[in-house]
Amino acid sequence: MAAPSSVTERERKYEIVAGSGVPRLVGVAGVTTQDDPVEQILDASYYDTDTYRLARNGITLRRRVGGHDAGWHLKLPVSADERQEIQLPLGGDPNKVPGRLRRLVRAFTLGEKLVPIAHLRTDRFAHRLADGDGRTVATLTDDHVTGEAGGESARLDEWRELELELEPDTDPGRLDEFERALAEAGASVSPWPSKLRRLIGDRVPAPPRSRKKPTAGDVVLASLRDHYVRLRRADVGVRLDVEDSVHQMRVATRKLRSALRTFGSIVDKEATAPLAAELKWLGQQLAPARDTEVTEQRLRERLDDVPSELVFGPLRQYLTRYFAREAEEGRTRAMATLTGKRYLNLLRALDTVVEEPPLTGRARKPAKEALRKPVRKAAKKLRSAEAAARGLDGHELETALHEVRKKAKRARYAADTVKPVYGKKLRAWRKNVKAVQSTLGEHQDTVVGRDVLHHLTIAGHGEGQNTFTFGLLHARDAAEADELRARFAGEWRRLRKGGRPGWL
Image 1 (cartoon, one colour):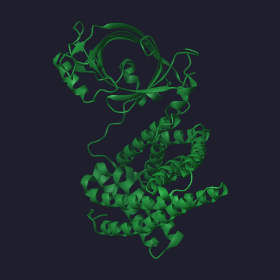
Image 2 (image 1 turned 90 degrees about the vertical axis):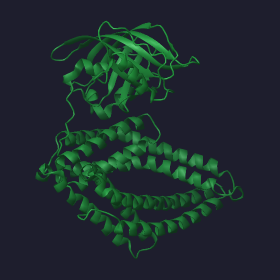
Image 3 (image 1 turned 45 degrees about the vertical axis):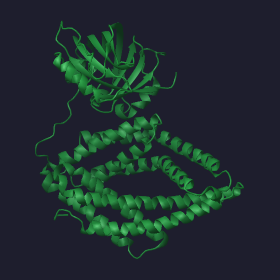
Image 4 (image 1 turned 60 degrees about the vertical axis):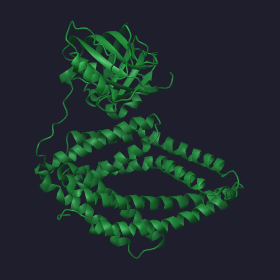
């Protein structure tokens, strides 16, 4: 089967009174022509788990016959108006979801079987909206839908709706212009994000509602759920080899682990300790792929700054070969992790924690009262790490500063978690913590960079490369490390003296 293709769709759906005509949009958002309708018959079967795991996460998976893009479609939410659509052509068993798509949504299905849940037949009348140069701006469709959902009790429904979809190169802001015109013509925004959700409606559990005065448990769980969503979306990106997806997955993994450890007095630390350990393992498995990306980009930028007369031999070609091997090994390791049973069990355990959290008694207390202590402890650990680095030098200092960086990262994550509660009170402190973390991140890059350059020098020498330039870059990294340590000292003074609430 052909490799999946991906497109971004930006659209909004509207209710329209039965029997009314299709609104005219000439003169709106640069439209000068509204073509006569072209009729299409679309026949789609939708798939999900028996517990609607995909629908609960705003994901649609269907097999559609008819129209210009007939095939298998996997739609992933990006924002309220935007979705990423991954497509595969028709082929194979029409009653079985292709393995490529099953694997892409594994982090959401958690291994549960995908089964047919609904069938929709749409009689579509599509109007092309074009500008003065004849370029398509958007498509307005008048959809007459008949739907049938299975389950314990069958459900049949019929309705009519309008759909306004922008072309990929159309300014997203034009959606608002079209919406105002459609509202004036009597159309109203649909309360349903998709045709499928309209059909299955109340079969999908509603997300938990936030309280006016949240408890500590409410705040921490909201943060955990957000990071869990980001982890699973990044999982899809890693499987599709999307740029920066490994980085996003590592960030989500770190934030989940940090939240479990920092707020262990809210979500029972002993109960989640095995999960925190598995999240650490996941981060380690993803590290080589991400570290290779960062190191290669940084080294190439450094090499670009070296005068051409000091670059001896085909160093760039050598780096290409070296990092291609490293990248392939890192990706192979990451993919082996994502397809393994251990990772699936980690996701299942994480799903259980966010759905049935092991909350402590403190979790029921008002958030403002119960969340101060965890943030205070994170700040104290950061101060202790900085104190432990004083008086050290050489490799010991580099290791200690890396520990300060990790504690700063955890303190910043803690501030992010409690932001809905304390708002502006932690803004200045968080900003200063982030500055410390960023500087020490750059410092750690010089440490890793020097290790890689040392390895490249030895390996290159063995292959007959002139490695003078690597030695030059090594010296520059050492000098930059000194500068960064001086910058850190100043930023630490600002952090220590900067504005923060008295309880911190």
